[in-house]
Image 1 (cartoon, helix red, strand yellow):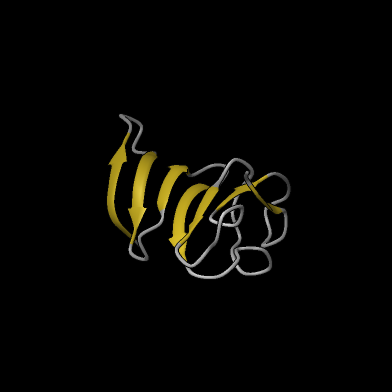
Image 2: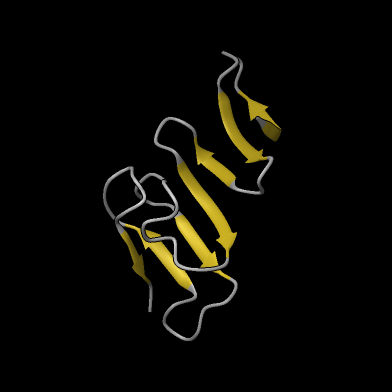
Length: 79
């Protein structure tokens, strides 16, 4: 369930903010912007191109990019 969303004239969701706070940029490919504690690797499923900002990260581990797959693997730290 989305807390907020915009729709096209064809009633397709174009942009949404989910109830958990994730920003959905592309509903077809599940491209998300997320914020949370801990690594997303093995924990957060998303589409390629998604971003995860880690609240408890250190230099080199605070921003992750999803580079492959649609499961919870494929996250890589962005330096």
